[in-house]
Length: 209
View 1 (cartoon, rainbow, N blue to C red):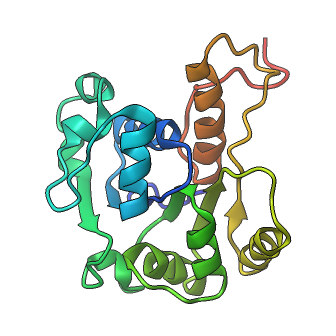
View 2 (cartoon, one colour):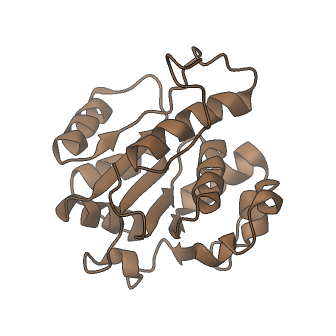
């Protein structure tokens, strides 16, 4: 659990399928009053356009385009807590372990990003920030969405788990009586929030009335 709710969270969006998970997670975290440092890869940009029809400008990202309808639902001042960094900007604060953070989530996490982090072969800000969280022993949650999985991917997941990360596949459960795709998205987002200690009521808990 996140014992430092006053510290910022890092969110990275990479080129795996699952843009709706990323948008909903960002909305929930901002609505919870958290400060977010966000970075989006060029492949993540392409997936956003393909899956939800939003063309992101990585040089000057527009939160209204990024969040879509969620933009209007956010409480006043929420966007003041959003900081967006270009994935090539290795001078960003999140590239250094001296910049204190509570946790990092890569959602969705592509196979290439998983491999780069698992083998410490960072080539961009996202890879570097993830390596920082591992070396500083801070919570790192990766959310892959791939099926079936190859042996190298499984080995990369094992390696990153052994290094201290949480591997949380985007595998929604149906036991919470989901009525819509949005409910299935919320299931995964709730599990992510649980891992980083962000309270939420996105799903009915098992055993609850």
